[in-house]
Amino acid sequence: MKNKERGVMIVRTVSTVFIILIVLFFSLVNSSDAVEKSLAVMNINYGRSIDDLPLYVALEEGFWKQEGLDVRLVRVAGEYNVIAAALHGGIDAGQLDPGGMFHAALRNIPIKVVAWLGHAHAGTRCGFHVDQKSDIRSVKDLKGAKIAESGSITTAMILSETLKMAGLTKKEIKTIKGIQLDDAMQHEAALRSKGVDVIVA
Amino acid sequence: MLEMHGASRLLISFNDVIPGYIFSGLFFTDKYLKKHPEKVKAFLRGLVKAFDYIKHNERRARKWIPKYTNVEMGVAMKSALRHFEDGREPFEQIYKQQEIMIKIGRLPENVPLKKIVDYSYLPVRKDREKNIQSNK
Image (tube, rainbow over all chains, first blue to last red; front, side, top):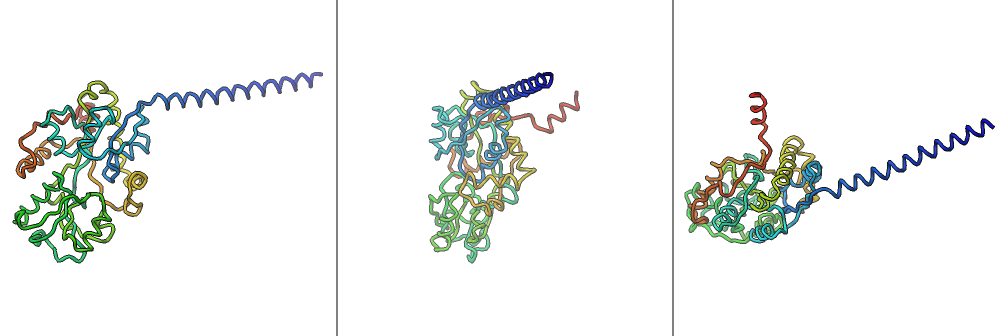
């Protein structure tokens, strides 16, 4: 009889512990769901390029989640579209180059840069690219060259300063505008076909 | 990145032409900054942690590139990255770039940087943090 009572007691204890564990499990699952749901959503514009690496890292390493944010990367192309999306609430933050920011300020568009996304350094490989076998060895050899560039303020600045270094004027080169800065395949094809001598990218 | 494909040779880099060239910035509208200052600060704390992470774990950081771009892993692991510090850039550098824009006719006039840049949402700089602590 005593053994029977002991058995019943053990079964009751085990059942109680089991029920408590189930309740604990579901309450934990629900609370993590609640945390997930309480994260503040932020839509951030990005360019799908290597230069946006800090955004990918912050997202993947959970740095924004730790700050209570659910950041979503949104692709919006074109300076005016980015500004319009920010002004109308389509995105929370956007990216602009300094030239874009200056022009926005001149038009009294109420935006502020709160952080810059890096700068060039000694290891930077953006610049003037020529074919591996090209005879252009220095900037002084650019006279008469066909130079493809995006037409942006950035490339215009780099081009102008490079020509100054080479002692050349714009009239002594031929520029082809409209090349996309991040399309390596297009650049490769243009250089190989000799359609252009230099690509600014 | 073009060099990584073996097609080209770099003649001169942006940095050779304009040292420390600043490429882009992250902006919010004034309305958003006024309405959600703490959210912006939290966002920037996360971003600065990412800058720091890239500095100390570059190889691990680079592995995320293919997921978000069209760049293959081999290229992602070798391509040059920008130099990321703490989100701030000296005003002298930004003004230098502005002067060039005006000179080449791509900007009609000078724009005061206070009108377009606000670093107050960024976390306190590490060196200043140390100074504050040592002064206590």
